Amino acid sequence: MTGHYIALEGIEGTGKSTIAVRLAEYLEKRGIDVLRVREPGGTVTGERIRHVLLDPGGSVAPWSEALLFSAARAQLAHELVGPALESGSWVVSDRSVYSSLAYQGGGRGLGVAAVRAVNEPGLGKVWPEMVILLRLDAATGLARQENADRIGGEGVEFQAAVATAFDELATGEPDRFVVVDATDDVETVWRAVIERVEDRWAISSQA
Ligand code: TYD
Image (cartoon, rainbow, N blue to C red; front, side, top):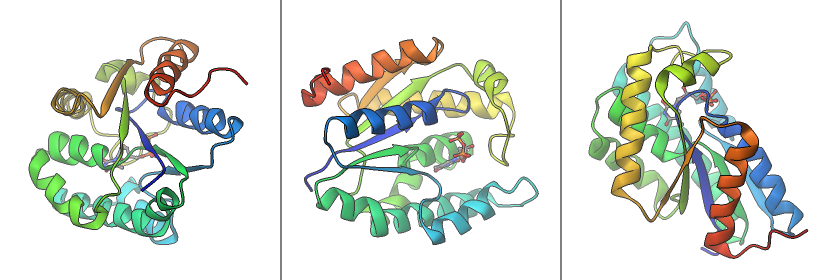
């Protein structure tokens, strides 16, 4: 593997997607090949699974949910993320396996270790090298959310459990996680993110 895999993570309403777009553009401007993806989705199979998972009218049991997210992710790793990293591209992902660990492992109460175990076989080495956790309290996140899907529409207690799980994951893997306070405006959040990325890979802030 020669590329670098960066995932943006957090609960609803943290501004992850905006930061992911900016980060990809920032790297591209510096001549780096970037693949930007979002989870669940990114492949034909993955987008079909996304529909099953997020349709507000759907009924999906907790383990079915965990396995479907894992299936969509395995497809993305096989078709896009793995080959991109092999070819030296960087990958900027809006969510990753860490969302499953926090939402299904923590939020749904399936257990982080069990959810990790079902994800690992489909991913192999295709695992985020840096996870940027945009941290926000659950009530603020829900207030900022524009359109709730089936999972985003869960209540504040669920979001709080997910937020706690993200915090625990960050504490458990301090070398992988970069934790940024997302309460501030997007410019402040962006500056904090890019500082940490530049520190890690010595990318010039010029250009
Ligand atoms: P999405 O439309 O991508 O929303 P967001 O802007 O919040 O990223 O919806 C993804 C939803 O699915 C979101 O509520 C988080 C949830 N999710 C999981 O529960 N587990 C996962 O593994 C992933 C990738 C997402």
